[in-house]
Length: 168
Image (cartoon, rainbow, N blue to C red; front, top):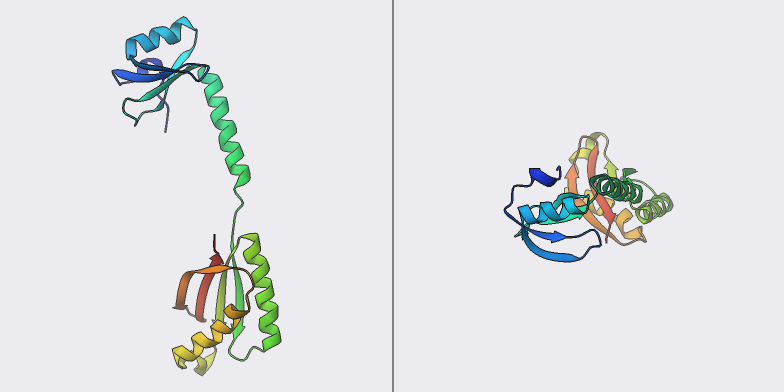
């Protein structure tokens, strides 16, 4: 979205804010432009959807600089989360499940999503679905972090899987 400046602004009336962040009030576009010109600055429409639209009197270069700074800060704060995967089989032992659950808890703490897959080979693919869900639940009960199910039980080409993520 591009901001409209000076003569690009289409509204007939604007709520104007000056360069010291003081609310001047609702002015006609002509008055607002004259005021901005008198101060040697630009009139920038910062909220076009408001009623009346909000415009600010300030240097356009400074406005762009502040906007890019804000964007950079937001990008730096956003950490990419990925979907990690854990695979268990029907006969996976209790100790191995505990180790996998411990790893899953660590990943949840870091904010990643986790796909827990019950790997089924051969005839195991046609076993009772209730039994298979119970086998998958064994891992879920061992996870120590708080989580929520983001993608419920689904059948995939390798078997049954469920996706969980950290609950806010």
